[in-house]
Image (cartoon, rainbow, N blue to C red; front, side):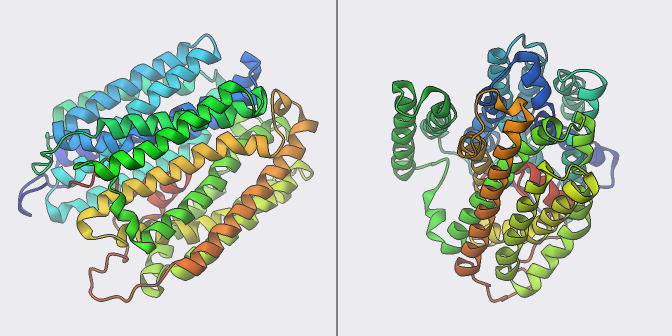
Length: 504
C-alpha cells in the first residue's frame, strides 16, 4: 500500500496540514449530518405534518445506503484511486445536501437523504485511508491523531450546531451548510492530496454483494417501519420483509463463493471478533434508538428549544473527551473483558434514568444525571470494544475488521430506529402529543436499558483477555487513534477508528 518509511508527506509541513484539514472537513460533513438531523426532526415533522414512520425514514434512508455501501466505497478507492473516489463522494454528498435543503415534501427529502448516504459511503472510507497512504510511516500517528481529535469535535458540535441553525433560521440550513464546506474540501483536496491506490487490489469489485446488501437492508427496514402503519399481514409489508430475508441469504451465499468478497465471512471464525460485534450490535442499537427519540422527547414533552436539546448532550461530549483515552490505556493493561462487561451495564443504567425526564423536567435533576451516567458507560466501553474488534484478527485485516465493526454499529442503529417506536407504542402522529409520547418514550428507554444489560452479560461471558506477547500486541490501542475525541466520534456516529479496506 505504501512505500518505505521515508516516502510520503511530513505532518509538520504546510501540505501535510492541508491534507489533514481536507480529510477532517470531508469526513466531518458526514458525521455532523448524522447528528444534526435528530435535533431537527420535531420541526420537520410539524412543518410537513409527518408521521413517526416518515421521520424514521428521514434517518434510516441515510443510514441504509451508508451501511450497505461503506465497504464497497473503501474497495472502490483501493481500485480506482482514493482521492478520486473521495472527491466524487464529497461532490455527491454536497449535491444531495442541496436537494435536501430545497425538498418541498417528505418524499423528496427522504430520497435526497438516501442519496446523501451514497455520498457518505464514498467519502468516509477514503478520509483515513488517504492519511495512511499519504504520510511517512513515522508521521502517520500525529496525522491520524489530529484527524481523530478534530473529527470528534465535529461530531460533538453536531447537535449544538443543528440546534442553533434550527432555532435561528430553518431546519433547511443544516443541509445548506454542507454546500460551502464541500466546495472548500474539493478545492483543498484537488490541490494538496496526492493520489494513491492499493497495487495489490487487482481483483474485481463485488457489485453483486453490494446490490444484495442494499436490497436486504431496504426490504427489512421498509417492512419494519411500515408494519405498524399498514399492518404486519399487509401484502406490501410481507413482501418487503420476504425480499429482504431472501436477499440476506443470497448475500451470504454470494460472499462465500466470491473470490473478492466485499465481506470475507471467514473473519467471523474468530470467536472474539464475533462476540465483540454482537456486543457492538446490542449496545449501539440501544444507543441509536434512544438518541433518535431523546431530542423529540425533550422538545415535545419537556418543551426544550432545538438549541437547548442540542446543549443538553454537551456533558456527554466532555466525559468522552476526558476519559475515553484513559479507558483505552486501562484496557490495554488489564484486558478488555472487565470494561466490556461493566461498561454496557452503566450505559443501560443511564438510559434507564432517561425515563425520569418525562416527569422531572428540570435539566439538573432530570436529564443531566442520565447523560452523565450513560456518558461514563460509553467512556468505559467504546475504546476497549473497538480495540478488541481490531485485535481479534490478523494485522493485515485490521482495516476490514474496523470497517465491519463500524458497519455493525450503523446497522444496529438502523434497525433500532426502525423497530423501537413500534415496540414502545409510538405510531402515527402521536409523537407530537406530549401525553402520548411520554409513555412511549419511557417504554423505549427501558427496552434500550435492558438491551445494554444483555450486551454487558454477553461480553462478560464471551470476551477473553488475551495474553500480551509483545509490545505490539494488537489489543493495545494506539494512542494516536483512540483519543477521547475519536471514541466520542465513534460512539455517536459509529465512525470507526480505522475505516480502510481489507486490501490495504
